[in-house]
Image 1 (cartoon, protein in one colour):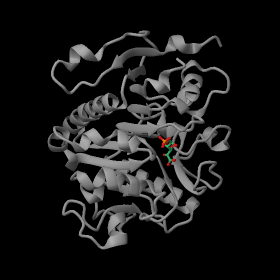
Image 2 (image 1 turned 90 degrees about the vertical axis):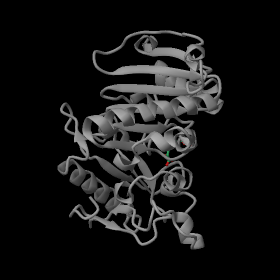
Image 3 (image 1 turned 180 degrees about the horizontal axis):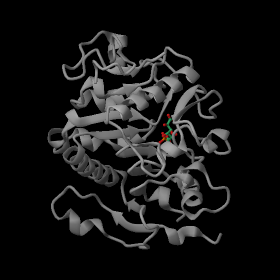
Length: 325
Ligand code: 6PG
């Protein structure tokens, strides 16, 4: 990968911390992370709210996990959609780690690679159990390919950088090969960086690292891990913004993001919704109304209500975020 003609190039210092402090980089995360561098009535019946979870990694937790079954409804022929509600964010994080690790095992065995996309925001903190025992030692990190669903066009050592956020709390703690981490080229304009990232994805399709959805023709990531803003935005797709309707491009730029910073790039809905598995991770009472609108499809349905997946969509909610369901 790293040596392919894939329009990727190494950046000299990939650690945002290192950029500031000149500390040594971990040996498994050296100076060559790659960047893309080429120039109704409630439709609640369609939702499966399956449980209030209490985490599943401790002994006997399987019996404790399904504490309360709120509703179970089968939906759609193909896509499985469910909502998991946790008494505590801590237990959500435990189950999210197991969910991710199980998919990692499956895809690493089935296809020798696992393509994972993350958002910025609090999602990264909710992934913290993955970098702890047992997962930090059991996951086949060498087969991971790591992407961002959206990124702010700022230097990688900037506090607003989603790369820095993921690096500091996640990437610096696991041995994902640097060549498998696809950061944006923030030296480009937002528009050029979006084109560059899309070109990078197309190369990864050509080299069979990234699959393509047979039904949509868009890239099919194995797992997309998304947060949601209080207004119901996902990625950098904001309520009422025209980019929510983009139907052709894979990656687009936005220069008027209502959430600062204003310059960003983002995957489009056709890409998000062509994923095999999507996890939408939402915590806190400040997001309860958007969760309600997205899941019950009431009022102005926010962008999060348009998220789907080809195989499985799971909403991971804590109790406060689910309080209006
Ligand atoms: C970004 C994110 C964005 C984020 C939501 C939720 O770069 O801004 O990718 O989509 O996931 O805004 O963020 P919080 O979980 O921090 O509220």
